[in-house]
Image (cartoon, rainbow, N blue to C red; front, side):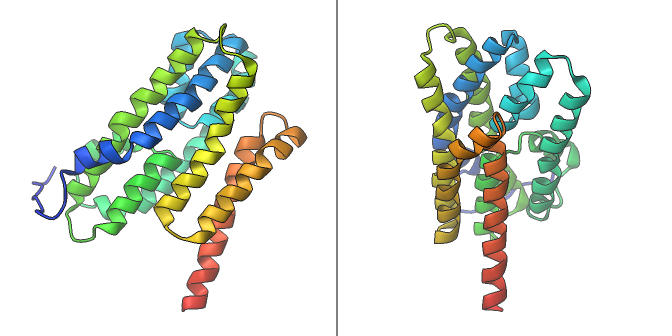
Length: 241
């Protein structure tokens, strides 16, 4: 990896990534606790529940994948995993220009833990600091992952352990944290109205959509919300041009 020069006006990137990701990590703890409880009810072991979190690292998809996984429908599991993890290619492509010049053997493994949250933080930081080197930008992303992944995995294990005492109403409340969290994250990252409106719309639609497509509500709303954001951003770009 190339030498990484320091920039006096930028805090230590790894530490700043850890700090900035605290709200993400705490939210992951709650969301993945709910997942862990559902995974136990579905018949997974604690090691399996945690392994799915580490391998997929996308809570909505993990809820969807539980049914096929426990039914040993491996083709369906592989298909879902392939579609969901395609996000790594798309998000990674957006980050590559910012991490250009760094050794692939160092960059590629951490990029396997790209999620909507870790990507939003990493990309926003990299795009907002064009004056610093690729190494510093990458260290920030490593800080984000260093706190987000352990709390997601820990939440999965904790949810599995407390599944018997976790009231169904509380479990449902933990699931509602997800759309509220993404709304807040989008608003903070973009600092514009359109993502906030899209996230809020997603929050309102999660329950009715899940009633129409049980188990797929979160994923459908997340995808539609993302498409809405892209559409609004593209229209705004064309208008400015």
